[in-house]
Image (cartoon, rainbow, N blue to C red; front, side, top):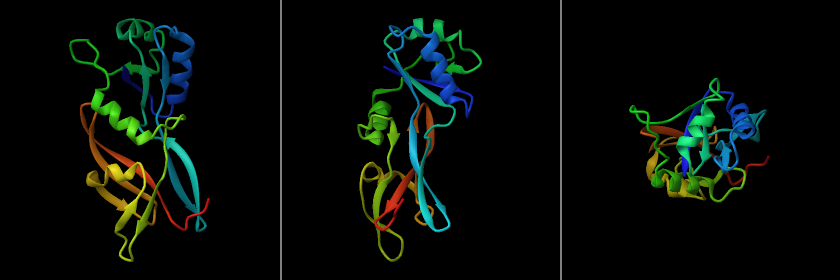
Length: 173
């Protein structure tokens, strides 16, 4: 099962590396962060880069959450496992995991890729590729010129706004 772990924003990769060194492989199958492709326009040219999809969060896959938590205590400066007030843990729900996997579209690097979009002359999206096509109904904001849209979904116990990068037909890297 997947579990979300809160960490210091900007220190996510350090936390992943520390967990991989400290926590036994038997207890933590893998530890990862989710990234997304984004577009920067520099002097009129679109440049693709990656950034964290959820700044301040990393994810682990474990079948032994209690044992994982005990070993995670050796990494206190980096991590806080998300859980209930009574001290228990809760995994990323099956629906949330399905949502995240659909965003990733089987990407081996855990990166949400840019969605190709086609817009009409008024800037309305008339066609789009994965993963955005699944979530057009969740879109709350679009910035076609800046090459992103924002969707709102319920994740990790609250509503969250997620930026998804887009690529127009004529964009070059």
